[in-house]
Length: 379
Ligand SMILES: Cc1ncc(COP(=O)(O)O)c(C=O)c1O
Image (cartoon, rainbow, N blue to C red; front, side, top):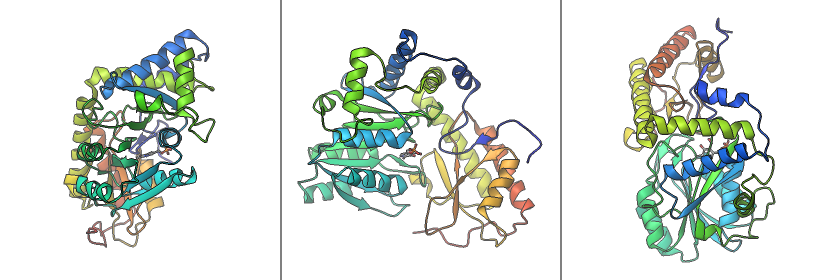
């Protein structure tokens, strides 16, 4: 145990460190029928559409649960039962999307590249030209399992040129990276409260083209995750269909207010970019090497090669760094020993520099001399 009882700073991709104002918003109780609470829900929905300039064409449907619940709801409601979904995969979240679509009985094709290779618009062009039966394409914008950025604008344009529909998992990019549904042809966009808007976890949301959702009645095979029903009920009553996560909704609303006050998406991207730069510079000085090339890295979460030293063991490393006030994230690669460091949340570059000091100190405490990785960067 460390000497301090205060919370560690979370360098994880959600739950993440939230501001005091966001935490304080959770200190009140709300009734789900209360008009004041339902006005907060309406505010959240409006503000989320503001972020992607979606008011003219799209609607925002919040959904209880973690991000995956919203991905399931979106796929199950917007992809027809006889649809054919092409999933573009370069990490665990792409695999998860393909799996859940398959479990719902949708026809699924997967196009998989290595963890450090983005899908390109040329790949998508070739795949769609070769298979006229594909109706929908699913893309993970920032694949959080490594932090790799897939080229959303070019892929969206290609999917639209082929007359197919695009489902985007923007879970870890929404609010930080530019997404404009008035300019990019995106049918369905999914994210959650506890990511780059910096709210607590507990609800997701789907921003979906109004004309698409209007045609989705009765399509979902799940009662709880029926996005059409959730939307229709909310439009009719202003209320959530089933028990809302009230404290999460009001805290998310507070986080959205702070997001706007900070300067919206460009300001958030600037802060996360500064966080990432401080992190990478500090880690390089320690001898730790990033897994991805800088050109394909999103400033959200970074994967680092683990030190080659036999004294390295992630659990001990995690505990040592945590005792120094920072929570890291394990790697998600099967072939390589890695760990991840998130740079999103209510933190700035000075917290990142302190995190690097804590990491260096932890490595010394573990007696690690060989900090550089055993394995060369995966090609
Ligand atoms: C890209 C992506 N998709 C989906 C999810 C949803 O995961 P969960 O249900 O654990 O919130 C996450 C969470 O980190 C994510 O980063």
